[in-house]
Length: 447
Image 1 (spheres, helix red, strand yellow):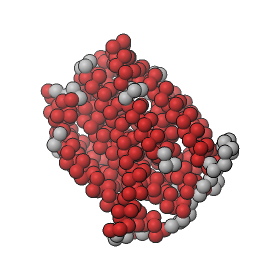
Image 2 (cartoon, one colour):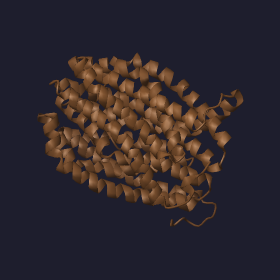
Image 3 (cartoon, one colour):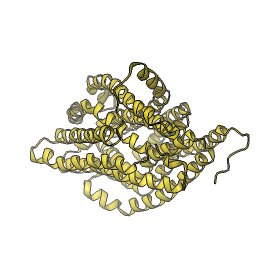
Image 4 (cartoon, one colour):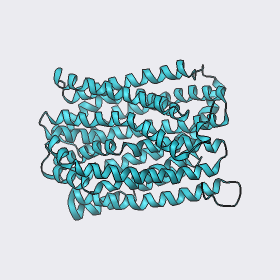
């Protein structure tokens, strides 16, 4: 199998992979925002708050699936870099089975704890009722999403970013088409939004499995001895990657709980920002998935100078992207406020974020890149440590102090300060660790 990323311009690979993945992610993130818009037309502030509370739990399940997919991309990219088609096919098959085995019991556990966790987050009354109804429909599709994301990760590891993009675009298109039908046409409200999301996940799964089995011929019958060995190898990367990704929902849930102290309007504003942020900064989310296969293939080919170049070119991409995205977000602020018809704390929070605090994305992007490099350079425990530090030490005290000083807006200022500190620290450590990979004592300067 061809290792595409071991030659040619790194910046071109970073840009091409990221932009292609961004299109797919944009479709999904846009649908999430459109979900919020459709539900806002129903005129209940509790609906937006319910999505905010439910989103904190769904982010946990999504992060688990993403962590499993990151681990899948890492081991598959290493196999591709080593040039073994047979090993890659066996690995993909065994990893997919392993993902199903992992996600099923987690899905069951989350399903039976829905209301308890929602109340921990501060949900109550009508918002609690709506959030629970939404969660009961969408949570059972968790294994479906995990396998679909793993299929997308394999496509990216092979360098087929467009194929991965088609998978996510398909999911977004199905969701967007069914949302108004289920929410308004059938009068299902928030439950309709959940059903549309489940249908989208099923469509993604069918497409992904078809491509793996038919187009790439990467499915083989699991072999008992090979399965145990491959899962052991996969777990070495996947477990730290999962832990890394599961730490992020901790910070998100804590922020939601803090916002709940200021009422449903603050929770609703935070929820809208939570849907808006990944849409506007989809390129940064896509970058974290693009960096891994590039670094992984070059590690397999022992081209250490190109790994360091990946770090620098990724930072250049982040800076350029954030300048454009933050400026565009500021210009669109009045439109955003008008579309969602928000008032009070929600309106103020959205305005402050769009007019300047969106700068937090720049430093989040740094963390995305450093963690992606750690996960794909067999340094996954470092990614886990940094992400847990970000979600706890660099989020909780800063958000709490900010909230006590300036309410919901102050909480976001605290979030920004913590992100700056951990983002810069992650890049410094990534540079140091990449230099240490090289067999010679001389540091890598990159070229």
